[in-house]
Length: 222
Image (cartoon, rainbow, N blue to C red; front, side, top):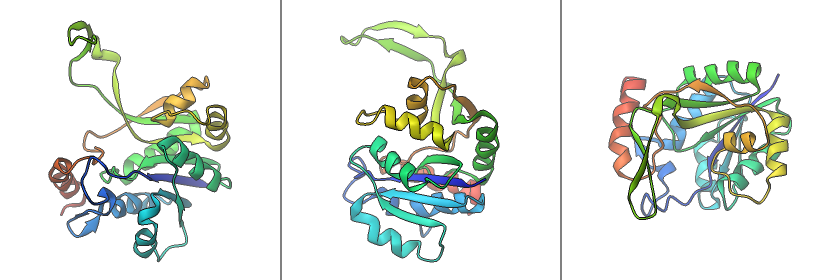
C-alpha cells in the first residue's frame, strides 16, 4: 500500500498581500514547511506540492533534502491543481489532499485520516458547526434559521482511494469544484467525516497570522 499527499499551493495569495502566504514565516519557519513536515512525520510515501510557478524555485530550495517530495506546477483553479497532483500520484493507492495554507494540521489527524480512508474509501476532515447559521435572500433579509445539529465545517485533508478520486476528477474536468469531497459526492460516492480540530484554520489574510502563531505554539510547544 502506497500513500500519497497532494498539497495545494497554486494560489496567488491575492487576499494576503504582496507576498505569497505560504512563504511567510512564523517562528522562523515558512507556513508551507509546517504543513509538509506534518505529512512527513506521518510516514506518507510521496508528497506532491502543486505550486504556483512563481514559487517553485523557492520551494525546491526549501525542500531539497528529501526524495519523498515532488514539486509540480499547479493549475489556474484548485480543481486543476489537484488533478495535476492526481496524475503525478499514479503509483499511489490512496491520496490525501490538503491545503498548503493549513499549517496547523497534526500528525494525529493525518494518521486518523489514513485509517479512515482505508476503511471508507472517501473521507473529509471536518468540525461540527458551532455558530448559528442563517439563510439570507438577495435583499439581505433573513429567510430561515438553519438547524445546525447536522452541520459541519469542511477542513482538509480529504482522502480518497486513488481510482475513485481520479475517476471523479475526469468526469467533472473543466468545472470549478472548491473541494474534492464535493466532487466525489457529485459523482455519487459516499463520503464520511474524520473529526478535525478547530485550530486547523486556513491562513488566508494577514490577520490570520497572529492566530496561527498562537495555535502553532500550542501544537509544537513553541
